[in-house]
Length: 438
Image 1 (tube, helix red, strand yellow):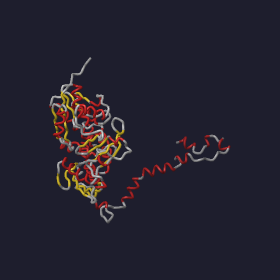
Image 2: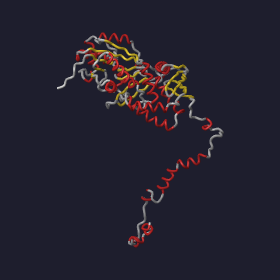
Image 3: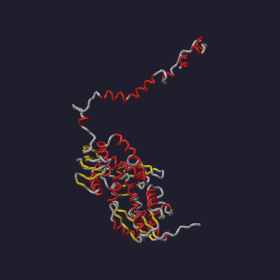
């Protein structure tokens, strides 16, 4: 019987939250191995030195903090933005986009430090376990994977609180404040607690990135966003690095209450879940890019991209970032968005964002064609022939349906034949000779 070798050193994706705080001592106790904590800086508000100290204090042999903000913005957020990636029509995928990057950094750190296993703090009910482990299998299938939530006998957050208290581990959450919060450069998501009842409105105190729209400024703010080939490059005329542009726009849009979404979504594992998301910059950038696309993409390309956006969003949500299909979709977008360059003005006001002006050197809008005034480039008489041809198939079908072979005629009542007619030989039936000779 084949048995696996004992794990010597395990790299844990560590945040310092409830789950991973408990996991360092649990992994040491149950696997007898060293634990390397890997912390991803993806733009969350965090005291990373305090997180490092906590990891070491609870038993990690080392803690590596990896700055991923620039890569997150340019390599994940902006490609997904250009693709129009969105899940179930509302979720801008802040958590889903972060997971493959965190897992990739975890794998790279694990290999650099001689680890022979990987661990994560995802529950067996969620999507993140899939996103992490699909990435692990893609990038380092030789490393073993440990998922404590699928192994330990802790069955609830209350069990975790008791486990942590018994070992003197301080926690960032309490039984009175039990929310599960995920924050990064793109968004903040909040789940758990009273939010587990979809009939309950979100408490005001859960929001971290956005002002209550009712308390937002009474005067609107107009921001100008510049794009090159479908990627944001400047805010109000100032060129910014992608992560800095997102960070700055988060502050502006968030102060106007823009970007709140309260939704029930379909998890990959088959159940429904309820979460509250705040994505201020992402909401504004998505609205601006769609507006610019309406100016620069032809109808057929724009319509095709709508379907692509849905598929791209599903790939991200389902943990298939590192796949040939996602790379192929990006190749299509590289070509389709060569001309998606320009500037869009967006008005922010009391939780809303509305594009109000747009300009592009590749604009397909031609004023001399679209004007209601006099023009010399469009002969309106040409429309008559176009309409005849455009509606030809519908006209032909309508004629057939209304004719003697149509369904209306087939179901019309007919008079009863007389006795002499019913006894007439077949050879005398009208049209019989014509049918036989034809």
